[in-house]
Length: 326
Image (cartoon, rainbow, N blue to C red):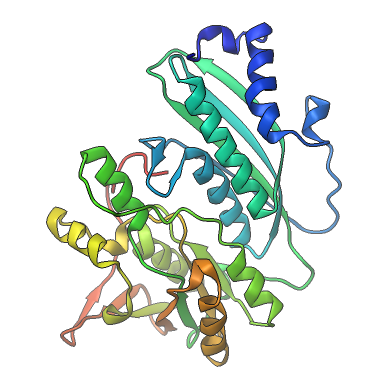
């Protein structure tokens, strides 16, 4: 069975869609009340984020748009030192979408949310004319514990920059699928809870965190350098890229530094905490390939020390790296 315009009418078909798919997987004591808004008890300082997901294809090696929509918003909250608690989910369904595919994606969202420790408490569905596509918006709320202050503005000269793992996996996976190129590259799509949780629990002074998504590492580090008024120095030999992804990049002329990821983050800490932070990150499933890639310096912008001993400026991504990677 496929989605048709009656599923967005607010009538019987809409109720069946809510009950048989969304209610089946998202049901909880807040959502089940079916009110116009969720009532939440939120003491203290909160972080709030929203994001829309339009990836093509909607199912790919290592994930799908449902998993991606939860991970993307959860990770945004984590990067401010927040503990993610609640999500909302808005769906735009194009006429012709297979109900079986929608159910698979909703089930994936529910499983990912459970693993991330968040509850989906409100949502909305609209049906539009189209070609069987699917778009999701998620908003998230997290609580920031007392004493945490994580911001790009906190980065200072001498701080050390750690990266949680290899670059370019998600971008290469999606582009491979769109170009119908057969390979073993899978998306790195993942919720990153374990890394900040572990670092905070062990008393690491985390100054800055950012997930490395659209625009890649180059864009993220340039944004941090601009906000903090520090320079950034990277070492080319220390930037991890899977050999198959590197080969893919070489064939197509892509730069892993500007490619999108959906399960990687950078952490900036004082020099005295760097080695301990690296060890802790490597003990997590999402940080087992973590490395120290550089440091904050005097000056401006991002510079990379190359393998042959030279230096090159690493600038932000210009133009469009790849449509619909997230």
